[in-house]
Amino acid sequence: MSPGRERPYPDEPAERFERPPISFTDADGRPVELYAYEGRREGTDSRDRSPPSGPSPESDGAFAPEDAFAALVAMYVDFDPADRAQGIPPPGEERIREWLDRILGGGQDVIAVVDGRAVGHATLVPDGKGAAELAIFVLHTHQGAGIGSRLIAALLGQGQQEGVERVWLTVERWNGVAIALYHKVGFETCGTDSFEIEMSIRLS
Image (cartoon, rainbow, N blue to C red; front, side, top):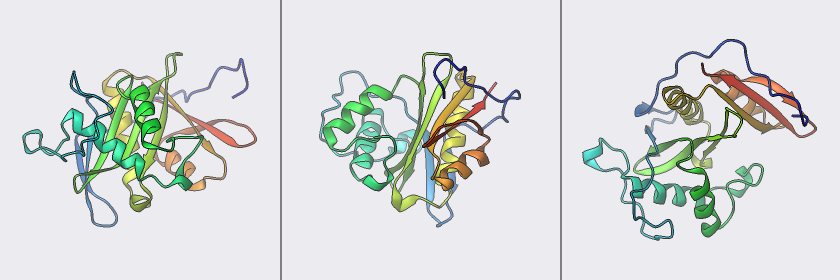
């Protein structure tokens, strides 16, 4: 978007999206659970190297807060470098932990879980201008099975529940699969430059 230009948003708000927790079966027949990230419990340390223990029975399958952070770290350590966009997620466990410390808890986050492992993460990060920027990440082993679209919709539902009114994102213009996914969910193109397309959606 050009400096000084106000970002445009659709005039009409999007449909109401279902919010997590959500259970579904992906196109490859895998049971998937979507959970809202609730933050680490007070006193837990992002440097803790303990592996995640997986979803807990008492929480209907959701990760305990400290385990959710560890599960996300483990997911991003396994992230295919070829799937990185705009420098994120960063490489290396320490940088991943620092990055997650910055983005988690300030907005809304939803995690996709398969067989006790985090395989996807979508986040809304407040932009300081009354809107939020969306980013989504799905492990390459679980792409192309419908997890991404359900993850985005669940995140937007969480955002609607918590009063987020406007959401935007940027995507490389060569990434036709992602652009089609965002259009499917309800985003509209609102700006372009040489390398990126900007898209937006109004939630309320």
